[in-house]
Image (cartoon, rainbow, N blue to C red; front, side, top):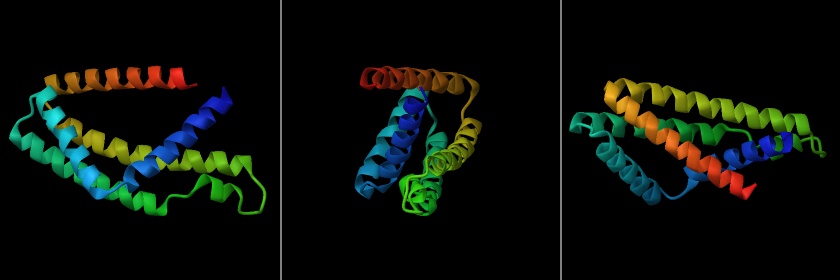
Length: 141
């Protein structure tokens, strides 16, 4: 079980890194699709759409800065010429905590933009996405 958790954390660390280093055009298209889907699913007003666009842009900028400074777990764990499992795990956890802090800050701000019905719908959508992700991960592992 510990190996599975470590593998998931490593995969998440690498995916998060690659997610923010892909080309800018692809990010723009994904951002637009994400916001269009939110607008449709949550019945957002134009004012809400603009606020969320600004929020997502600020989140992306902060995440880009984080990615420039985050530590690569493999490089950190092999600084002494050998592989240090504890350093690797601690680096992965530190990176995950920092990313979670950034994400939590922006989710909190986004929730302040939504009304109560939109919040409930957003949570339903997130629950469905998490369930699909768990199913996919279960099939792969």
